[in-house]
Amino acid sequence: MLTIAYLGNGKSTNRYHLPFSTKLQDKIKVKTIYSPSGKLTWPTLEGVHYTSDLEDIYRDPEIQLVVVTTPSHLHYELGKDVLLHGKNVLIEKPFTETSAQAKELFALAQEKGLFVQCYQNRRFDSDFLTTQKVIESGVLGDLLEVEMHYDYFRPEIPRSVTEFSLNTSYLYGHACHTLDQVISYFGQPDDVHYEVRQLLGKNRMNDYFDLDLFYGRMKVSVKSSYFRLKERPSFVVYGENGVFVKQTKDRQEEHLKQFYLPDHADFGIDLPEHYGTLTYMDANGNYHEEKVISEIGDYSRVYEGVYETIIHGKEKIVKDEETILQIEMLETGINQVITES
Image 1 (spheres, helix red, strand yellow):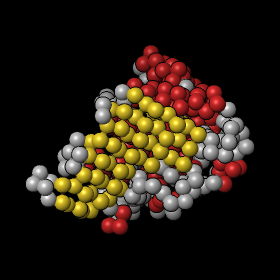
Image 2 (image 1 turned 60 degrees about the vertical axis):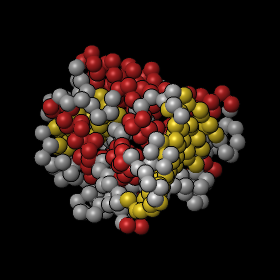
Image 3 (image 1 turned 45 degrees about the vertical axis):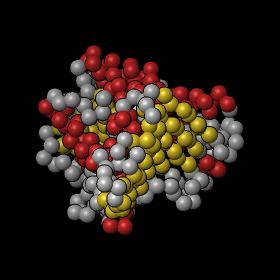
Image 4 (image 1 turned 90 degrees about the vertical axis):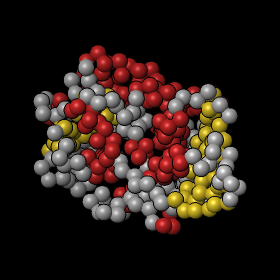
């Protein structure tokens, strides 16, 4: 068993972590959850110790892994503190605010023989896994362009933020999902073009980004906005022989927001109306258009990977260099805004 504790008892822990760590009852035991206020605003779990004293975690020899789910500006500080107390650590995204901080945490973990990794659950989104399946089928031919969109229509959010800060940056808060997907599948790009904007004007919230990553002649575009009344497709993949369009996103988050949890057999599973459309010309010049049954997303696969690394010594599912590259790209993009503000 891998015995774990959480630093933070808010939405991140209760919506995006506990439903998936507790799912693996034969591998993972959640022992302690810490929050500085001690307030219990979410339903409590039977058998779990809730505390406002960090030492309850640090002094407990049974706890092997600490999961940091606090606001992102505390990730580096708390992650380092956990390592210095001799515990392995899993840190929510964005992992740190700077690549220098990320490198320091990885070096410290290596020095102490401990595990540290970023929680990149979006690698196990249904739409992303389905898009990979289509690419690997080969029917699209050589890839020319991939578009990835993560859109909202929430204008009240940027309108309510009157000055720029890293903590409210849309790039840091959301490109940490999509950029990791690109890096995990396609690797390090040859070149990157950054367009990181404040649609409401200088010194306001960063509420839009459009990043183009180039891999030879293929371009991968990662785009997001808070002002999209009608969302763009989650994925569009163009190849020499055809196109795949996945309009809707993974449904795990949708179900979690409804408190419909992974103990339901149909949790997170796409219905036929959510299936993507694959259109292509085959080798004989015949036209095809068909629906692609979606792969099943499962965020518990992150915890499966962490368990296998800590307990059985297997390779990390999220490599250190992937996390560092992503933070370097976030830094570069947000510095464009800071320079112009």
